[in-house]
Image 1: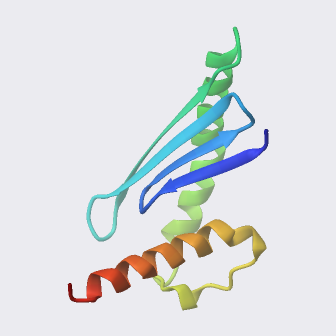
Image 2: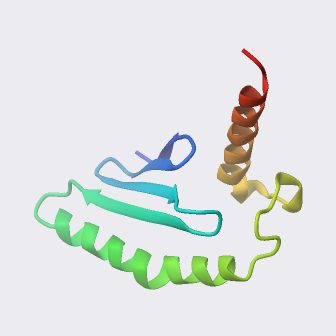
Length: 112
């Protein structure tokens, strides 16, 4: 099995890495400038599954999140629109999120 991700729009992601390891990520806006993010890794590997999940969490906290925060802290504009990005193939997830977001906004704007 490869990698896959399921998105429950707009702020919940379930990612699968192979057949035994998963990550659940939830992002909840607190106010206009802050978002609470929680994640949980689970590995079903016999005997070492807990250690694998612990290692993935440590990697997320020590490497990935600090880099993301450093990039986002000084990003301009503060609240970008889709046109502010030059998306490439690796940004397929971001492009999908924007499409889903725009569809939801359009659906809300249409009178019932």
